[in-house]
Image (tube, rainbow, N blue to C red; front, side, top):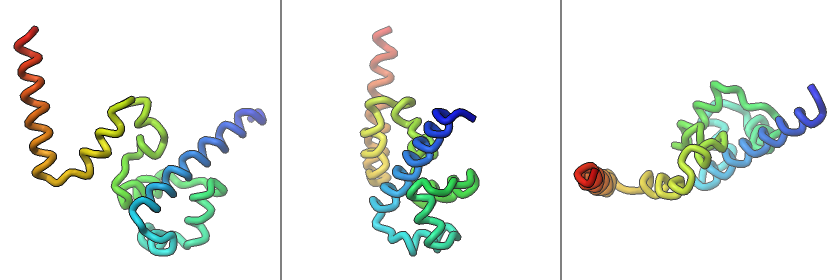
Length: 118
């Protein structure tokens, strides 16, 4: 493995770790409580959130589920996949079930109108 390749992998690990840490902080869960929730020692969580320790794939899934975020979001793929819609997806997630139903109803209506135009 070349030095550049190793550096790139380390940068990716740190980026993923930062996204996970920010997601945890956003939910206002302490590191100690979250470590207990996902079944790792607080010191291990700290190392993983700093990018000093690799996060096992099976733990990443548990971690994302506990924080209600997608693995695509954590891996930095959400921006590539959704582009400018990422902000709207986040807003949609924060809506009540009634708010979500209203938004989806409007989207269906717009889709029907667009289909008629074709």
